[in-house]
Amino acid sequence: MPLRGSRAAGPRGRLPPLLLVALAACAAQASEITFELPDNAKQCFYEEIVQGTKCTLEFQVITGGHYDVDCRLEDPDGIVLYKEMKKQYDSFTFTASRNGTYKFCFSNEFSTFTHKTVYFDFQVGEDPPLFPSENRVTALTQMESACVSIHEALKSVIDYQTHFRLREAQGRSRAEDLNTRVAYWSIGEAIILLVVSIGQVFLLKSFFSDKRTTTTRVGS
Amino acid sequence: LALYFHSGEREEKCIIKDVPSDTLVIGNYKVQRWDIHKQGFLESAPGLGMFVTVTTPSAEVLLSKLYGPQGTFSFTSYLSGEHVICLQSNSTRFVAFAGSKLRIHLDIRVGEHFLDESVVQAKDKVNEVNFRLEHLIEQIHHISKEQNYEREREEKFRKTSEETNSNILWWAIVQTLILISIGIWQIKSLRDFFISKKLV
Image 1 (cartoon, one colour):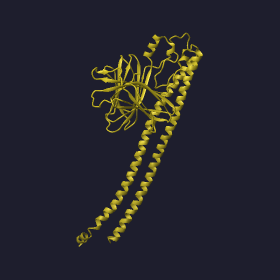
Image 2 (cartoon, rainbow over the protein chains, first blue to last red):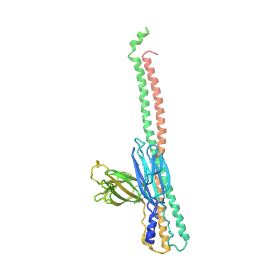
Image 3 (tube, helix red, strand yellow):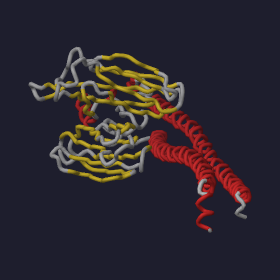
Image 4 (spheres, rainbow over the protein chains, first blue to last red):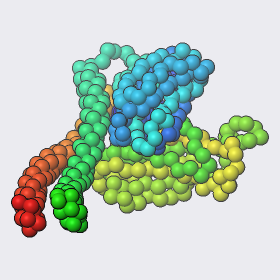
């Protein structure tokens, strides 16, 4: 069985053509894409979905600014199914109520100069079963059940791994930002400190230097 | 190929793929052009091609080729990190040609292992389970590779955090020393100045 993040291929060689068509209609598809969203930009993605398919959209902002983005999901009639502003991470599951092209958009229009890197994972439909039961005579053997449960466990491991990788990328991005900021601010502060204190002394000295004649006149 | 997005005629659209080393990445795409007269996307646009450029994390170009309106490209990463896959059409039309856009269908798979269909054809139960087991083993290998890569990245993260920590400490000490020495210098300098001006 191919890995998550790729299209699952059913065991096409074994099934009669009619069942193949039916299986293809509910074959799972998962597209995960990481892209860069420039400031003041909006990026939309479209997918044609069959009625009744259960779909999940999950997104996370990895780098950039306050790590937030606007997201919006619309059905073919333009009805907004999901709309959130300035979200860092979210997951949304829905069942397609009708056939057509569904559209989801990520917007960075509220940001003036930060690019954002956004990851999203759009899963359409459920994965086909490992051992399809269409032309089965007996129940699954122990070996087969073991394979099925291992496969499910591995799928969830890969899922957790992806989530962890994204969180780690986000944390690392923040740490690198912090590091550069600390370096620049420290150097800046040290320079300002030196300039101001040396300047103070010379300024004070200048108050007493040229006006010597005037101070004596005021005194007398 | 179901997921698609729109792009300008000469616009370059890039996708980032963070993969461990020695991983096969396969991409499938299909591009359609918007037709002004028909107000729709043409099924096929002869002469339209896409430049596919793949850049490694060390900014080297791994793959740079021109494909037709529909194509498959693949590459194997030899470094682990963020690879950038860029698609740009070879359209020579002027950008000022208003209303023209492209529809790009894209499907990128990481670590795909092809099924040996002939094995699936066999009705032998043992072979079928054997074949599924091999796939599970491939899945486990992929997970293991990702985990190794994760360990490398965590190390880099930890180094950055430790560097920030020591930077803060070092700069705080330096600034305190500057402050103290400047303070002493200021007082001394002013005292000598006032003594020389016979004000003290």
